[in-house]
Structures are given as C-alpha cells and as structure tokens.
Image 1 (spheres, one colour):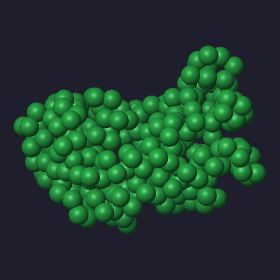
Image 2 (spheres, one colour):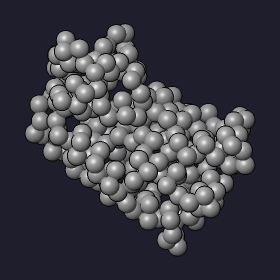
Image 3 (cartoon, one colour):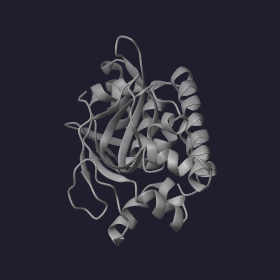
Image 4 (cartoon, helix red, strand yellow):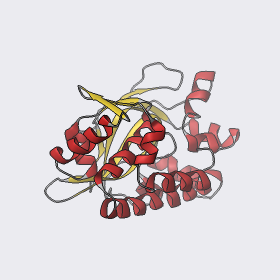
Length: 261
C-alpha cells in the first residue's frame, strides 16, 4: 500500500500548504469539525480552542497513515470515511483489529505518550480527517480538562473493541464475522463503499477464496450486492441477524462511553 500523501485545507475550504492550521471562523468550519463525535462532544469553548490547531486532510482509499514502528506525529479525527487498524506480522500479513470512523480518533498511542505505532493504519474508505499535531495534543491535554476526560473514555471503548475483535476472530464463523464487518463499514461509510475480495480477505485474515464464499452466501440471501469492487448493503436488518453478537456489543460500548456517537 502507498505511503501517506495528503491534500490539506483550512476549515474554510481553501487549499493550503501542509502547515496550515484549521479555523472555525466560518459556519463551514464549525459544522465540519462537529461531524466527528469526539469533537462534537466538547463544549463550544473547548472545541474552538482545539479547532484552532486542527488541519483538515483528505486521505485517499487504501492510503497508509502509519506502519508499525513509525513515529506518526499526529492524531486523526475522521470527519468522513473509515480508517482500519491492522495487526501486522513479520511477513507483512495483517488482520484488522479495530476500525475508526466519525465516532473516534486514530493513533491513540500519541495520546498515551507512546511515540511509536504498534499497528498499521490504512484508509478503508476515502476519508476527510482533522489531524492534530502531537505538540498541540499535549497542550490541550497535559492539564486534564474536557479533551483529556473524553479521550480517556474513548480509549476505554477502543480497547474494548480490540478485545472483542480477538474473541470474534477466534470464536465466530467467517460468515458472521463478515456480516459484522460490513455493518461496521455501513455505519461509517454509508450504504455503498469500495472494497475488493482481496482487501476484505486481508481485513478478516482469511484466504480470498474463503471470503468470496462467505460474501456469496450473504449476497444470495439478498443482504448485500457486490459488483466491480463496490459493495452495497441492501438489507441491514437481515445483515444484523446474520452477524455475531460482537457488532452489538461494541456499538453499545461506544454509545455508553462516548454518548455523542
């Protein structure tokens, strides 16, 4: 996958260099940042303070934000799209252990004062993110306050998602795991999104032929439609019934710990 290349903008929407900081001086800036659940949860005063240091960045499909042992200098608040977090082995095989959409933030390690990434972060659906540099994150969290408390709650939910993924990958049939993954994608990317069977097999940690069979079962049941690299969810209720319990467990966890989502 390609290394990260970004198109950055001010919140007002004018193209800027990669060093441009965000602004909520316009209605567009205010509404844009509140597309992210964590930023929306902040009071207007705290959000204005954080927003002054944010950069809006467009991230293409399948773009890598960081890899294991990288030292990414930013945290990322998605305003749209999906970022997949993968555990990667020495032979470059990866499996998704978490995903981050508008409900959250990618690169929790930086918030925890860990300067090296342990996982790979890749853009699963074209995303617009608001990124915050490490020095600015420290400025906004070193004395506690709203953002710190919010990110602590989010970290708890994120770790719960990781734990549930371990159990799900070990205990549940592929068809149920596939349905769960598709529901998570729909929540974050809408009813239709780009995906290939090869990429889906990487996310689920199985062979491509195996995931093709599982997706075919869901398609025959009329729950999804897959054509030419595009996936469409046709029957959400049916997909929820086909999914394992992990989808509901993780969703309830986030709703309890980060109510704005």
